[in-house]
Length: 264
Image (cartoon, rainbow, N blue to C red; front, side):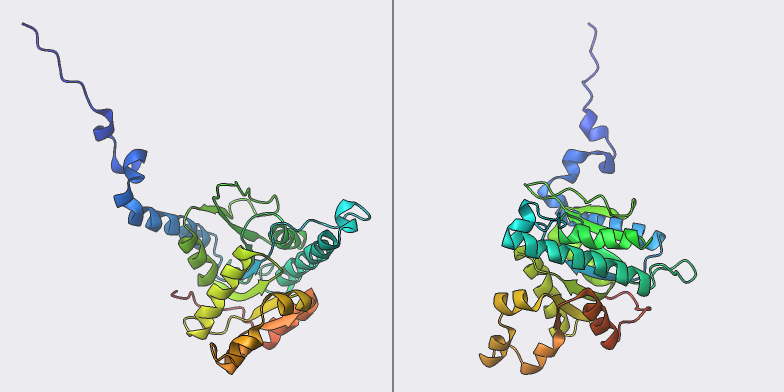
């Protein structure tokens, strides 16, 4: 009687890092978190990007197009104005912050955004127009957000976990620029303000653009009046109305070209 060889289980013969089903098990979440962190971390270190200026803002803004529909719509026109201001700020940061003049190959204050369209695209666009590299930290969402076309090739990263993405925003940030935006923008803003308030990070100027927007959206003074924050916490941020004013605020706050990596 001939005995047939046992059927081989190809899945169990795969190496662990080749087995996608294994890597996607709930029990492997901690390993996926570590891998997601290390992929961007190693790439940024290899490309000698030491520090960044992070720029947040609405994904819904579009460039101004003369008397088109967006310009005729008051909200679209306002966002169009801020698209151009974010674009200008991305260029100013790149020209004056050190990204164009690496020291021993190390770049400082590289423009970094959430990688999507709108005001994020505008900031990446301003950087590339200055001839500087810029980074995009994108996030996979049910309604897919594609990386904008102005992120430097090799510096566009996708994340599944918001927590890991937030760490990469904060770790190298020398400053934070926040343009008008929705829930995502507010989330990132208050994340950084909390880190500053609790002294998990030092320095890091935080500049909000468009006084009319921020004074209507968030009543920071009321937080102090109700005693939920200390009055001195109001000094953790500045609110401005132009790219040039925003850059000057960062310079006045001591924006540096050499900052050690932070533990956050």
